Length: 445
Image 1 (cartoon, rainbow, N blue to C red):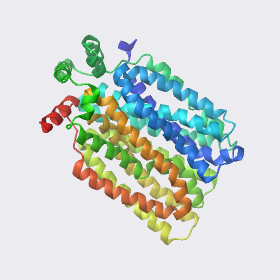
Image 2 (cartoon, rainbow, N blue to C red; image 1 turned 135 degrees about the horizontal axis):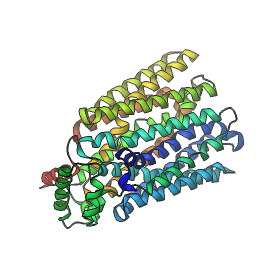
Image 3 (cartoon, rainbow, N blue to C red; image 1 turned 90 degrees about the vertical axis):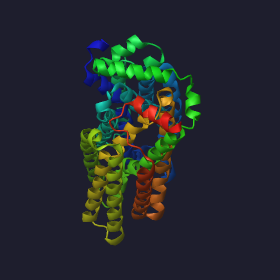
């Protein structure tokens, strides 16, 4: 049945893990408003419930990259779908804080696996000339998952149905589990296993014959290097890209995007909006997230990765700086509350068109074939750790120093991110994964 799958369906199911990541990231923002009615949460416990997902994500990202290099991308995605189903059901029936945290940790294992495997699979399945756009489908699915969660939150707000909000994550997980049964394995992984005939068959679904011959020849040259995954990870020529990948992964989180995603209703409530208006404002932000990711898909293979990162930094820093100024200088009114919505929306526009998709596209591009899963897993582990720090300490900082100063901190981090990208990040647009690896080896020599 794989032969009959269109190219579009291959990439749809390949990216569907991103939708689950997005849903479980976004749904907690609305659920938090009502969990307190059944299970009392202090500020610390609220942060713990949110951030415990990232504890599981750190473990999931750290394990799945290595496991996928050994057993294949497809098998690991199937296990990830099963983990998502279990985690969603645990949360739906959680009787206390301990089980809530346990359910979020289980979901985190799936989230970490998704962040490590989905970008690698999409990059390895995609032809060079459209790799940026197709790999960006991961971020598009993440944003669709987030906005889907916001709509579900809004739909269940009248009955304060937080258990429904959390439990419905099992539905797309079941779809993923079924879909993965018909997905082809990554051709790069098949070639590593000396299964050239199968690899060529899979590549024929997305590439022209001339491209297949060239990629297979380049892969054979790379495989001729007698190196293990660990040898490659320790090598001096990979080290600069590990630093670059780690840097952009950490900065993507430290600039504050998931503080907005997790706590947008809380931010809007503190700014003066009611519960329903706060969740509705969050839905608007989620829709912007999806629309601007579509803009990124249309431009990433034309403008390039590095240029988009720099443009995004300028826009996000400006949005945060203006927002902080408004909150410092104006009295709390309904108008100020809606200005908060507008400038957070502007922040989302720049993030979703640049840093959101570009980081997920670049991480697997930076690393060599023999260690792509493990290296991407390591950098996404750091991304999840940065996400954990932000989500755990954001509500504490919000209570201690106020919204305006938190935005100032995020803006300052954005400036540092701009300098890092300008100095260290290479451009990968228009180059095959094998060409990027060959250049890295050449520079080291």
